[in-house]
Length: 381
Image (cartoon, rainbow, N blue to C red; front, side):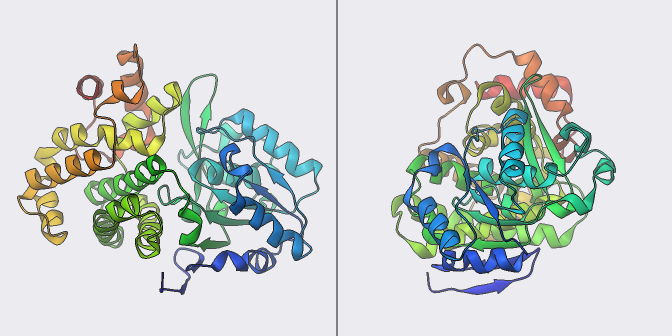
């Protein structure tokens, strides 16, 4: 990709092909001398991870790796990561990978110096002020997928393995100090991960755009993010080495995470309990439940979606937009429903209770009741 840029919104972002070469310099800028690279098990043995470790080692920053990270990271993963961080005498974290690796890495940097349990810092009211801000280790984030946008976020999603609930852990200082967005790192993603993570970015932008909160800056970012995904996700899926498409998708992922401070909605309210209980891929789950949620919200969002469709060059207003989402899902090999995704014998009542309790439910354009959540889940199987 020809585009290279340095951004400072919402944090320092080094964007462009080949910029992984600046990893050691980014760690130095974040005042790390002994970083711990945290990623997931699937990435741990891949060449891109070995190269990142080589860059750190070659600059005298050590070669430390932690990869005990589940697809939906839990407090057990977190405890193991904190132990590795403390035992190794590390002073910062390189968050490397997709959403699971990035979220767990940010949580390790946050929690390694705290004395309270992680659940005390859930994104509720001002609970984040309970933390010792000076004890939070610096973070350099390197996404290897284009989906969650966790690299530019101030929160981590951690699954409580006892209650099967996904919890959003928040603190302003877990926003990474430096981000390296290098589209070359995403070229080797399996097609299904390209699809699922790309639809995650689309879901973030779509829900942020539709959330009723007044935030015109986020709304504009969300609208352009949707356009970038619509134009570039099919290209990245069909031609994995298309660095221009990969770069636009990395930008769209970051844009979605910036935009959703405006709010999310029922897409995430449904996908969070499904992922927590059945360990499904988050972005793919978002894609599966997207159309039923769009139809559920139609009365509140029809005009807004019609305007978005026009901006994106999609004919037919709301119905045309829904047809385009169906086309995206089909062309990207997204399962047609949650049953095809592998969720069997679902406890609809429990899922509905979890959905309305999820913090994203409050951002849905149509109030999400227990009956509404139950009917939505029934439509998704």
